[in-house]
Image 1 (cartoon, helix red, strand yellow):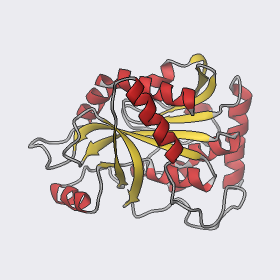
Image 2: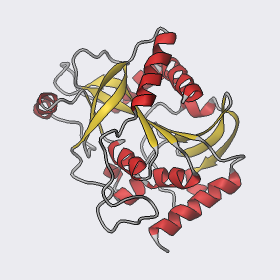
Image 3: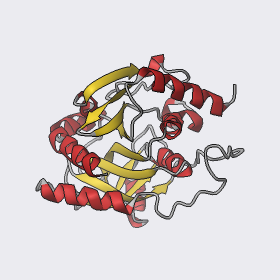
Image 4: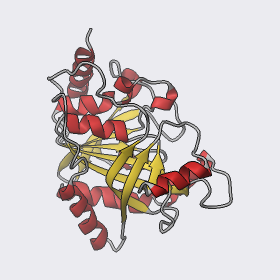
Length: 272
């Protein structure tokens, strides 16, 4: 069975099990999965039951696809994702995005927990991603191109939709909950960065750093989906504060800002 056939089989399973085909997909990062629980009329599909869908083993990633309503919009919420640092190949890391594309999703929102490089950010800030820098050393499009997914050389000039970023700003302003903007840099992980690496990343224009999102966005754009990225600055990156980095801090900060995060997502979805 080819990779395309595997993606198509997973797509067909979701289409048969879900109450309807979603218009918008949201990928939820570490500690941000509460959004999925708030969908109306939801059907929850554990990843382990979806054909070929990779498991996520990271704390804070539930591992389920939830399809439900946000107002009048039909939404698929992916609570948890696969990461390359877990040992997954890029084809698995981006499998869920491929399935969403074949389902016909036009808008996909990627969220993540990120380390703050920009010292103007406070812990718990929400950052709209304006662009990214890929320092994973990998690209999910390496290898033979399957034209059924997209073109050989997809343009990444507007990887993050200007329209969706404008909507996010308008929603945040209406909620009196301002958001930051910045450049997200993706690294492979799983170790956190050294202070020297953070100084380097700051010097090349990065505002936040994480271990996800970048490969998924590349594949989403390959398939022609419109992308919005939101980082929750759950901790300050190495060397910014005089303290060690621990994953429990990521989870605690994500829980603390979940109300603001969910409100922003719901507002964006209503207008997207």
